[in-house]
Each structure stands twice: as structure tokens, then as C-alpha cells.
Amino acid sequence: MHRFILRLTLVFTALALSGCSAETTGYETEDDAGVNDVEQSDDVSDSDADGDNGNDVEHCDFDDPVETSTTCGVNDAGVIIEKCRDGELVEKCNAVKALSAGTSHTCAVLRDQTLYCWGRNYFGQVGDGTQEDQLTPVQLDLESVVDVAAGSHHSCALTEESDIYCWGSSADGKLGGDQDFEEPEEITEPEPVTGLGDHTIDRLVEIPMNHTCAVTTDDELICWGSNSWGQLGLSPDDVPRTNEPTVVSQVSPLRDAATGTFGNCVVDESQTLRCWGVNSHGSLGIGEEPQSTTTPTVVSGVGDVRQVSAGTHHVCIINDDDAVYCWGDSLSGQVGNGVSFSNPDPDGPEGNDWVVFEPAQLTDLEPIRDILSARGHTCALTFDDQGYCWGGNAEGAFGNGDDTTQIVPTAVDWPQTFYTLSGGNGHTCGISYEGYVYCWGSNGYNDDIYGSVGSGSTDLAVLEPEEVAF
Image (cartoon, rainbow, N blue to C red; front, side):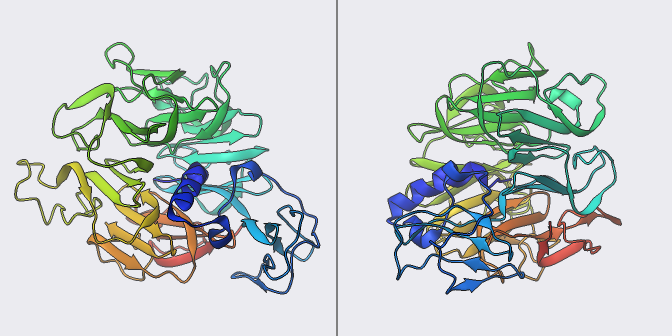
């Protein structure tokens, strides 16, 4: 899984290293997260406007430089205004500021800091006060939201005041509040996380099924929930689960973090990757042993890492050479090195010959700027915005119009141009350069339509991107 806000600093690092600039790429800066100024400025030219869903976008006029910067916003005509400085693009002014796809539901934060969620709601993970599946976005009763993370059975949001709210299943203490996690209940509306103390939260980390993590302004990783395999960095014998936010030692300060179902990985300030938790599916990238560890352990052979993304049981990274390495469970080919259940590794361990226990470089890729590890598939974006996907595609997770599984990276040509992606259990969502959300792939299970893609579709599989309207 993958979230948008978490990746911004890392994308800028990649751009600087590759010689690209914000002028040619248009990524947001963290300094402007959450700004919503609705006044139009004369500093932006209206000579070049376009849009892919009825909302025009006013672009910077590079032939007529301006000395002052505009603010992002939407004017009375519904035109999204870009932010410019000295004739150069500073920020694409996107309608959507943050996006997170959970297992079968998805959430998004808009520029006005409102929060919307949709999809499966059996555990109350949509957060609208019901347990009814939602085929289209519903607005939650929470203000000043700047970040969101959707998991399997729960969701969390971060507000401008650095407060975290969570909702959904309270099992294992993953909501971080006063709920009874010994006898789990479904919390259908946002409730505050307690016990954060003096910690100021900078951003949320993508959340898996049974624990929750966030990054503080001191670049510390703080987690709560299940510790059954030491994913909180604590002895599971001593602390099997907790609703008290706990700082994970040995990983601060960090640059990036990713959480899988039973383990976590972080990139520290030296760009070293460390992982811990359960290793039975190879998700730690350190070989077949140990089976689990509470100690953040260095993953070798991957270079200086700038981005890490974790699926359920597999992990992918991008290093400073823009190269991709993946490892872990490749049942559907999601590792991308040609190994899968139907095409096992002849030298792999008996009974686990579709598991890749050490990092495998994916050599048939162009330089990659962004990567998404979902439950059974993986997608990546190049610096030229070309999409690649691999792994399970039975319900259209690639969005390329078919349902053929691919065990190596395969180019995908979407009608839209995306600068970030997020994915769940067979569905994928992306934010276009104009700031609109599109989703595709699995929209339910068996005969049940969950609404995971959020377009209102009642098809079980949506094979091409469909717009999500707010």
C-alpha cells in the first residue's frame, strides 16, 4: 500500500538527484499542505487552461515571468489555480491533497481539509457512523484534516493540530484510544488517539491490518496495536498488543517508513533500510532466518534507499540510482522477478518456492520515481510518468483494460497521467496532475459489491480508471 503525502519529500530528493526541477514535474511542497485560498491572482496566466473532468486548470505562463507567488485555490468559475514563482511552477494546485487505499476501502483529503471515504464498511472503517458499504465518497465529521491512512479494518486521520483520530475495528488496540480491545468493537466514527503525550505528529504511515504507525516531527516512528510478531519493536511475550503509542527504538531519525501486516521497514537518515517483524514470507529481505525479530535489521545489497513501500507480505524500494528492488511473498508475481506460485523458483525452499527471501533487482525498468506495493500487485511510475504494474490482475488492478496477471513489470498506458498511486486488495487509485482521483480494479468480493473504486460502479471488476467525484 501507498499514500501520497508520505512521498513528497522523497520525490523532491529524487528530482534533485536526477537533475529535474519542480518546473518540469509539478509536485507539491509540504510547506503548502492544506492551503485553501479561493481568490484568483493576476500572477497566473489564463492563456493555457485545460482539464479532464470539466474543471479547468490555469497554468503558469513561462513566457511572462512574475515576481510574486500565487496561492493555490479554486476561483468562482471552478478553475484550479497553480502556484507560480518567477514564472516557474512551484505547485500543482490539486483538489485532492492526500489519498490512501485500504484493503477494500479508500479515503482522500481535499484541499479544504475535508475528509471523504468510501468502500467496504463492515467494521465501520469508512467512518460515516454506519456499517453500510459506500459506493461513492461520503464526507466524515472531522475538520482540518491534513493526512489519512486507510488499513484493512480501520482508518486514521491526522489534523492540523497534530491530533490523530481512528475508527473501525478496535481489535489489538490499533485504534489507540480507550476502546476495549480485548473484546473488539466496531467504532463507526472518528475517535481520538490517546497517549501521544508530548509527541507532535508530522505524518501517518500506511496502516496494515492490525497495527498503526505515525512519524513525529522529530522523525521518530511511533506505533500501537498488535505486537504478535514484534512489529512494535517489543517482545511479544511481554507486550502482545497495546493501545499505548510506543516509540520504536533504533530507527530514529528516519526518512521514510512502511508497514506490512506483520512487520515494518524504515529508511534512516543515512539511507540505510532496516526491517523487523515476521519473516516467514520473506518480507524482511534478510534471508530465510530468523523467522522473526524485534530488532530493526539492516537489509543489504539495495544501495542508498530513498523510498520504501510495503504490501501485505512483500516490500519494494527505490534507491538513489532510481533502481527498484523487491522481495517477499510472490504468490501472484508481485515481487516482479518472474517468480510466482505457478512459476516457482527451482532453487527456492520446498513449500515456499514462490517466496523471494532476499532483494531482487528488477532490471527491465526505466528509472523509477514512485512505487506502490499493494496486497497482491505492485505498480510504479517513471520520471516520464509511464506506469508499470506486475503481480495479480484478476480483477483489473492494473487498469489496462484486461485481467491478465503479469509476473514481471509490464508497461501500462492509462488515459490519465498520474503522479502518485495507492492500492489495496486488487484495487488501485491515483491522483492525476489536475488533482482528481481515479480508481480501478476489484470493487467487491464474490457477489458483494463494496464500492472500493468509489465511482458508483456496481461491477465486481472495473478494468479501467473511473473518476471518483466529491
